[in-house]
Length: 127
Image (cartoon, rainbow, N blue to C red; front, side, top):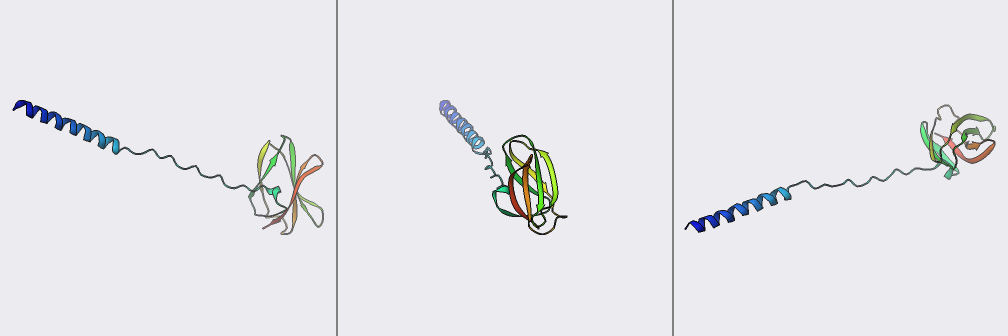
């Protein structure tokens, strides 16, 4: 009778080992990678002919060379320059903030200037 008890004990032992192994493997947390978040859609300011802009809004535009550029906001009716900012641009997308609190609430023109050449322009309406 001893060999039967020993065989039963071995079967019971290995079935417990396999059950514990399956329990440990089956209960491990799956590594789930979060889905990549889509990048926010960026509207290039000079891609449209007219834009409504808000105070403290970021405007984005693309430059082809690293040079000193000037952003000018001009009044279309009087042809006077209201604001002017010179900055060193980088190749690719550039972002600047536009402040409209002191600007008149009428059609204005935003110009990107390199030297004396107007590279791009668009009409903006401060809101």
